[in-house]
Amino acid sequence: MLTFFYSIWAYRGFIFSSIRNEFVARFARSKLGGLWMVINPLAQVGIYAIILSNVLAAKLPGIDNPYAYALYLTAGITAWSLFTEIIGRCLTLFIDNGNLMKKIRFPRITMPVIVAGSCLLNYTLLLAAVLVVFALLGHVPGPEVLWLIPLTMVNASLALGAGLILGTFNVFVRDVGQITPIILQALFWFTPIVYPIEIVPDTLQGILAYNPMLPIVSAYHNVLVYGTPPPIQSIVITMGVAVTLLLLSLFMFRRAAPEMVDAL
Image 1 (cartoon, rainbow, N blue to C red):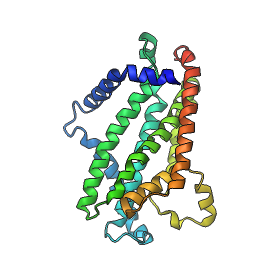
Image 2: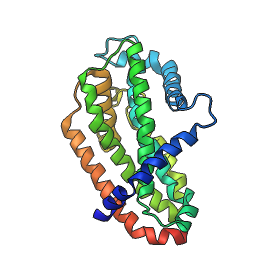
Image 3: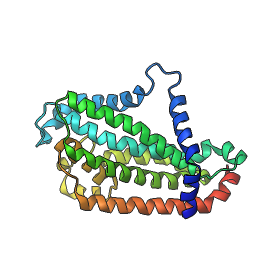
Image 4: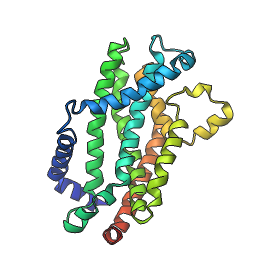
């Protein structure tokens, strides 16, 4: 395990330059550049808000704002976007970089670190835009917004652990890459992002409690929408799950790394 951290530190320059180069190359020929990272999720929010706001706005007590549902929806999608982007990038990470892994000797662990760093950069820009949009809509989050720092780390760790496990399996069993988007789509609708948890029957709420993204999305709602601190106990449990997945993924990655090149 210490070898992983040493490799990351020793190649920190390579990691930071890769993140910067990827960001620049991604929008090199785009007129709007990095704005597309903000436009896409906000467009998704707009679509859902137009369709569902009149139905679900009344189900959101405690928010004194005519755009209550849009605020609720934006907070949930902000959390979800980081989670799914990291998993989606990790899913095909080793397959997409198979030729690089065969030709160049470098610590393979730097690859998921670069992905996580790139996704966090995108997320930071999105979050800044979200806070500006909230202010324009007359809703300025209070000091509780500082909770987003640990929440982001828990969210990213959970996604990176799950994504690295799925990405490792996908090298050897390509069906993993086909079924994961389906699972993520189902998980999206089993997470209270476009609807409040209160409208779910009590019998189903017990099932939703096993969703690891439920505490994270609910915490984003508490911080960004309701202006209250997140429930510490649920976040600590989710953090434990995230750390467990991260350690398991590193163990699997270390064991599978020698065979990956042959499989690719």
